[in-house]
Length: 347
Image (cartoon, rainbow, N blue to C red):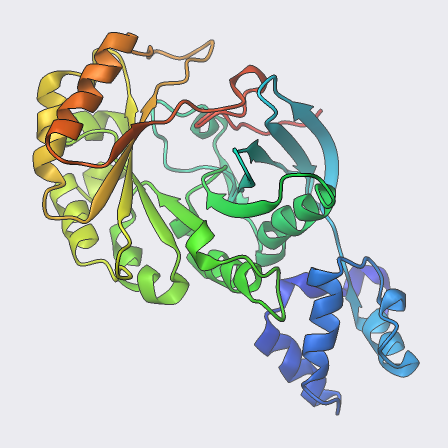
């Protein structure tokens, strides 16, 4: 079988690969052995799988490849963040961002090439939408970067679907990818408590997401009234604020968990005391915490970042209403790796 007709084994789920093994007359337990080599030991060839018989290794080689993404470029920010530019087999590009925290790394990964949501404040959206990422392309961002930082002082422990694209618009592949990213014996072994999906609010998918994924949920809200959110986020015209909050209220949330609401503060748009009070009232029915993100300005943007005094006054209103709320200043701004700034181009 020529290399072009071989399938990337990372595209397969555990069950899909086990089924193929059974069709080949091979015991399903081999799945654990083979996937452990791929995900835990990070091998690039079947020849390296030394506890697997030569005939099986030949069979795997004839049908599958173990692919990595094409790492085109890595930019390093003054704050230590790294932005990875990956080339895909069809000529498209995506970006992932590795963020150093106090005692671990957080990795921000993409789920689509570009984005179709058209949020007015987001630079990524201005590049348009090309296609969904495959399961393998999502998983490989984590696998490849985990391999890249192996042996460093900080350990990669947190994964956030906050890169290019709307994760829930690529629901099937994102769920499959999470299964592999979180699987202990047959995947990358990340705790689901350390994985977060951020969505602009595709309401129909929220009903199943809690039980299908079991990960943390973040909602990109950015306004507490329909007129402002309609202007900022076209998705609100289809799924307005009240409908979104009701879906969050009934979301299948694990005990002691909360939904994170991300609120980008934009000067003169959604940063007034009235906006803060409206937000406090809106979120009252939901177990929630709030991340306030001062807008990241970029050259062609029509919006501005509020003054520091305005940002802190907004925060204090929420704190006085007994919300858990923090200001999140995005990292990697000097390499266009901050929130809403990913816009992969070729190099």
